[in-house]
Length: 134
Image (cartoon, rainbow, N blue to C red; front, side, top):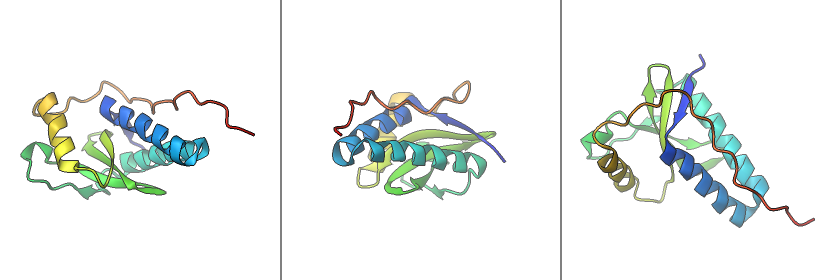
């Protein structure tokens, strides 16, 4: 079953930030592979939305949130909620961060429930890349 992937703006910004970090540390090829792996992970989850692990912090507003590591980049976690027709990707975060704190802060700013997007959002394009030295 194919499902729809709806990334929230925060998730899209996370992807851009991670892309830039990986590009600086390991090169643009690795950064592009990260985006491709994130996209593949999201589409896998959209078809099988309950396959991720339930995220169970002490914050009731985060009920129903699940996560799954990004394939080939397992230190990065995709946080999402299953929807009737796919998934809503809330954030993509490195596992060493204060996950519950970041997610709780997002929901404080947003209100009780995360609004659903009107349609599927695209993966963000890679930031402009300077030419790699030959």
